[in-house]
Image 1 (cartoon, one colour):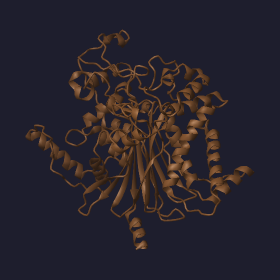
Image 2 (cartoon, helix red, strand yellow; image 1 turned 180 degrees about the horizontal axis):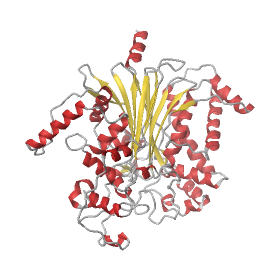
Image 3 (cartoon, helix red, strand yellow; image 1 turned 30 degrees about the vertical axis):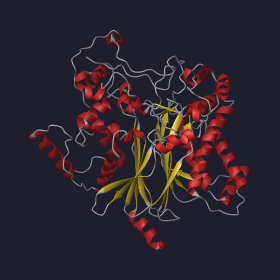
Image 4 (cartoon, helix red, strand yellow; image 1 turned 30 degrees about the horizontal axis):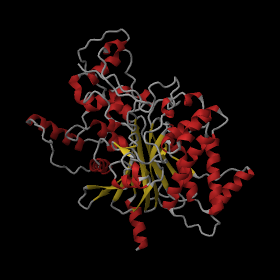
Length: 563
């Protein structure tokens, strides 16, 4: 009999204080996910998830796979999940029957979980300034961490043209991803503003008049903003636009979108670092800015203006373009590069930025300094600040920070910081009529599905057309009855209306519930969604998806005008 006790949160010291550095005072959306995990029903779920007759779901090994963790386990701040010999001692003295009991969520319960965080927005065909090339977007999130460390943002630029959409993948807590999701679009919008508009905004602040709105946000009710930090964030943003006013004399208002995106990313990361160094008289804010700086987040942001699509990526989330070929089939075009050890150019960049004697230590076991998977990220000052600065900030910080072993831990072979940057890689693509949609998603999706399958599933969902491929069984021995069942399931799927009204939800359903034949297995989906929080993170990451649908007629009209 095999029972997994569940991993300790990665990124939290083993002997951390009672107020861990990276806990977040936000409502845990996962409470919606486990309404049935109460008292004895918890043991029923553990029975379903953990006993060896479901070994393919739960117990592939006795520890958490390192590939699933942002931070590599290190004795200073993390432990593996190990089976305990006397595991029954942890059941508070209650004895449970060891016979496995099956427990499945019903289809309505599965749908309730999958749809809890979905959001859709349809763009008006004419927004008062121009005809939009974006029809609308669907987004959704499925937590694995508690609380979820992913964030998402979407907004329309009001003083310039275009839309901004982005996904943010946090690690070592959600403080940094939350801050970046609130702030980054403002920095981008300000970077895109002409000199005259910046002057108008500054004059309005000086005279106490109402400010011109910069962004129109499109948010799910769970996508909250931090009211306590709003003044601090505004002051930092104002300092940024004041510097832009001083740098730009107004002689030319030609804005380079790529340069604006790069400057916005770098400036926000610099402000996150500076706010943590300076601190705040308010103890709550002082602790908040430190949590933001010591945690980290990757970001993948798209700016769509007419046929001009820019994708700015920092880290290992991805942007994928869905292209419909002349025969109706779908192909995937990657519009971002992962910044990790699988990217040879990133490895070369890191080695060139540090002395030759660090060539073997800067990346170890495919991780930055043997610890961090993404090679670019916001926050993560432990990989950017000097050792003296880290010690000075920690010693002068609150007790929760000073008593936490993770913050005091210095990465090995830490000689020539910074080792990490938030500078994005920006890729430009000119939209064509055959470019039907864009998928922005955190790595929780791409770890479970191939990009071509992702694009095909979304394309078929949006068009309602299924291009049938021969059923591949991948070497499995399939009986005639099983094959008949697969074909019957395929025909039922073709003749029925999709149960999902959101493309991102439909994609998450496949990501979590697909079986070895590429079809959604309700039993598997139910099991995966029933896993308690301690086990869920062992088998998947948080998943956040935005699906942006383009207006092919408008894109084609843009092309015809320029010919």
